[in-house]
Image: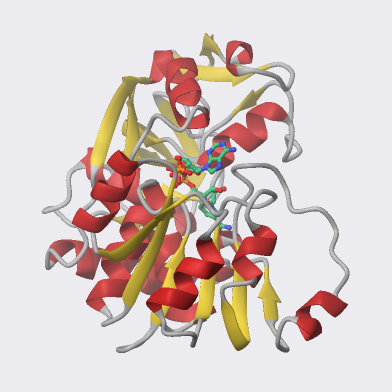
Length: 324
Ligand code: NDP
């Protein structure tokens, strides 16, 4: 059986993504072959397509997330069986009808979670998990700032942080997105970042916040620092508006002995035990209904270019799934 995949032969705009026939790969030792039922769309796919993140090989099958069924086992794989329903995040090569993947990067998908939901939530949901439970432990009574609050990661974070007892100030670009963020757990919304610090000051009665989760990057970095209470934590975890330029670290002192981290899901799930714990925590909040995964857009995998255009032009909300 042939495999269909979206490949890029050079970095560039959405048009560099080509729907091509590729030989079906054979699982090597420790790997399995996966028939993918659904593939997740993530902003990191844009970074690999444009070349902001360096392609490991060329041509490259982009995509980091999917869900499907195990169809063949490589030598030495004992943790999985043919027919198992599985999902993953953080393994490049996702935009394909079939793929091989290391067995130790897969988790079994609970029966109650569909392939579409699984494929759209692993990367964004595990990111939300480590951000609110590990990078900074969000707790009852905290007020926090979440950027792109109506986006994939953002909408999950708003619900999860509310579930943990926090008050979320969500930052979005339009009134429609503000409404959506409020419907998914944000207590307050701010449109744009020009007045963000002033709004945070008003909402917190001058106390400011212990953590800002900033996935927008270049455009919002300084505005985010200005929202922090003394000793607050800036978690800069994305570059939707472009990468943050080098900073003068003295600014962290001047603005109140701030902490700065640039976390990635790869680090937080590198150990198998961490991957399992992170996924289990995500499955738990989804299965008990505390976090609902809003799959607000569906595209054919062959139409991945249209999905990228929608994501980059800020037209998507919540999560997006690509169907092979
Ligand atoms: P989103 O669904 O959040 O889409 C990106 C959103 O960013 C847009 O909808 C838009 O929301 C906002 N945005 C602000 N400025 C721009 C701009 N100039 N161009 C485009 N969008 C902009 O995407 P994801 O949920 O997939 O990812 C969110 C962010 O989290 C990304 O930056 C991603 O790289 C990062 N991420 C980081 C991870 C990590 O471990 N470090 C893991 C997963 C994601 P609005 O219109 O409301 O401003």
